[in-house]
Image (spheres, rainbow, N blue to C red):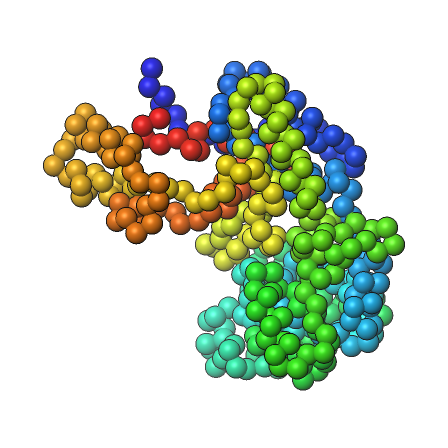
Length: 398
């Protein structure tokens, strides 16, 4: 019988993960138990995806505020530090900022505007237009910002992040000065020692700071790249991808090398126990944007921390709509189905530049599948940190 269902994404319930748990065994066991209880089979090229959160927890990859403070002090001198382009997030940045402030005497906090890198607004574009402010050239201090825009609370969290971050810095005994600007070199009028906190534009920011005379430039990916007093660390991403654990600690992004060991272990266990070759990935934030809140979800440095080889690359698909409306517009019914099926079966291995592929999603497989998994698992109390995606690599002829 012809299969009538395409891609299916299932959240797999698992026990609460603790440090030291054998994560590979737990994941394989729970996916197989889910298959048994729900009556589905594991197939070749199924994708088993694991959220980075439980991987980091199993790794015990945590760091204290004191560890952050010590590393910031060691690398940036412990005096006046420019902290530029942080995202507006209590979960993502507040505990990191606490550590940064604890490791400095003064923090000059430079916020991008009208929004941060991932779309959290300080002010709206309409407010800028009304005030006659050009965010590409105008630099504002707090007084001028308040005169023009007053108090602006985040529409979802209700937090005034200008006040919140200022209070947090002062609570750690550091002096704070806040400015609003969008060119990295502006911070150099206040200090030559800079910690840039942007995520996806960080390399450009570092380059511009160094070019314009900064003495010391560190990104968030340069802090806690090695343990401090026995803390966790991340050799590749430092503090990037970290989340609040407690008021005095963060959970760091899982370590890449250990993640690779994990995905290969899981893949091998499925092959040994089912005879099926599955693909495996550890995923973080999805790469999608909320059209209402205007927030780009990707606050992690990447979607896929580690993945098996079969998930490398981009989709190689033809657009059914294009074929139906163009190449086979005179056909219908079974004749149309047969023609489209034949076209799919004979498609080239690389469709770049082929008009029949226009409109297909030009993204990496890991970004697409990771986004699907992030939406399936959610970020709250669903209790499904493992996702099983089936049929993703099927097409109309499968």
